[in-house]
Image 1 (cartoon, rainbow, N blue to C red):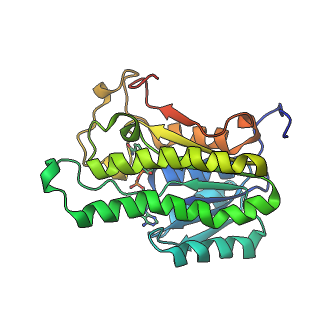
Image 2 (image 1 turned 90 degrees about the vertical axis):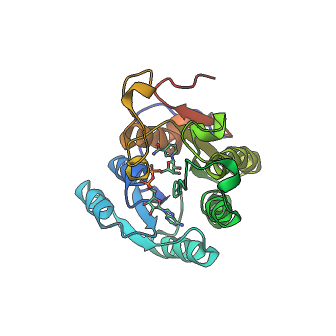
Length: 251
Ligand SMILES: NC(=O)c1ccc[n+]([C@@H]2O[C@H](COP(=O)([O-])OP(=O)(O)OC[C@H]3O[C@@H](n4cnc5c(N)ncnc54)[C@H](O)[C@@H]3O)[C@@H](O)[C@H]2O)c1
């Protein structure tokens, strides 16, 4: 049993893997975790040089890892690289995802686009958790944070059926893994953001007026919740999905 710990958040020398770290929420999260002292493996299909520069600016170590979460071999290689560099994994932020087409009629979605989206968002999250699990188990500790969505809660406002299903699946996976992790000191939680201004949503018709708090979310709004869930400050929370949506949804 881990006793409650008071005091400020401290991630000094923790090792974090962040997927989808090149931009948007993943980039802001990488920098926020580094600011609190963590070393970061920034994983993405896109180069992460801007993220790496931000991490270096706050004085932490980083790895820029080319990793497609669609490919189990990439996921395993990324984890191997992290173990080789730092010999531990304290934090996994499974953030990489695609949005897909949001505006078609139900009968227009193809099997191919359904499969690609589910494989990227849901299977990719599963593969990442699966790959870090043995190391966290051996350590007897770990914090996993998965990016879900308000779309997985309510069936979406401006999202397609495949995206909503993938995020609902992630919420369920979080709870399943949390139950398995309890006895190993592994915490698994999710975050369900509302509309956040990132490259993913730049061409979507998101408006400040959609949000009771009067503005779209920014990547930092999510990054700070990831920091909380990755830190000792959340040591009595597991299997939860935290809603971060400016008041759109209250459950
Ligand atoms: N922006 C929003 O409004 C919003 C709302 C709810 C949930 N989310 C979730 O937050 C997370 C981050 O979203 P964002 O808005 O920053 O998106 P984004 O598109 O700006 O960033 C996503 C990153 O994931 C990477 N990525 C995509 N496919 C990948 C793959 N196969 N392998 C590795 N990397 C891959 C992209 O290259 C990109 O860098 C996602 O899980 C998204 O579903 C976002």
